[in-house]
Image 1 (cartoon, helix red, strand yellow):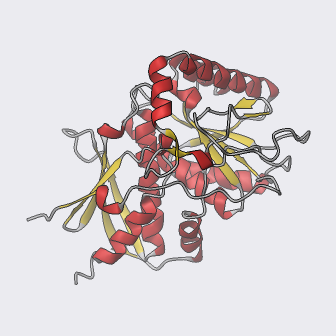
Image 2 (image 1 turned 120 degrees about the vertical axis):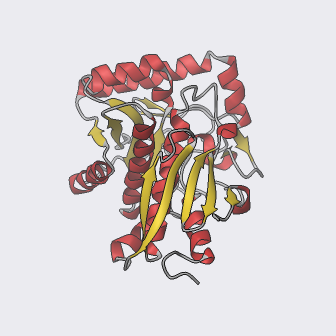
Image 3 (image 1 turned 30 degrees about the vertical axis):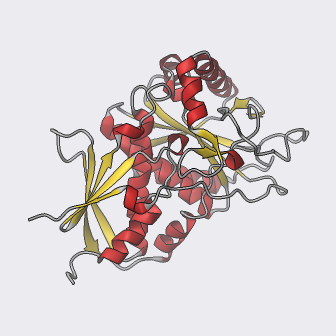
Length: 331
């Protein structure tokens, strides 16, 4: 056994947690290669969504979330991940090379790792209770630690612009037959290892106050608060970067993971919203009207308290670890 690197059991445990990361339509568009003293993350282009995500931005965000989940898992297992992002200019699909150094796990490391299996994408209406300011400040700080800006949308005008952009993006995509076919392919399943299961997708079009969520055909999740008079108290965070290149999108995915796990550890419900960033016109509207043209929006995160009578959501399925790992030995 080489004491300078984790053993196979540790790496497998860390990768299993990494693969619990959220991904667009639960496509899980990542592959891992094990080589000597390192683990390598690759994008899987065959699991891309050309109609939903023509730029491949969602794919990179998803892989960034998996990379951050891996870092969190390794930290709890006693290893610091030394990450080299986009290490091979000749291979843009090679997203990261991860090496390891020993470290003693902290209580915070264990808390973050324990949030991984508990995190869910909750598309239901949230409670009217506001997220405490110290918690929102902590979520913002977690994004900043990953090199990403977290802009809380609170001003009435900004909220209007964001809600309008979300609605316009949904209308544009719903008018595209290729998008509708892609959405049907990746949603409403009952016994698949990928896609958004019927049990996790609301029936119909979720509308929570002024915010519309993406419709997943075949959804069966009933929102207990759909007809409730109480307002939805979710906070909306736009995660944005100074540039809009592959590295920025990868880092935005890592920041999204950090925000989601910190919120889960605090007992909050979360839901990433990528739809308004998938349409050029609405993405540009958010950049100009909500972010004042100062940064590039990458993902919207909805955070709040689950309704007190909300049933626990089942975990979404994941592909078998053997199906996402390529093992090879460096000579």
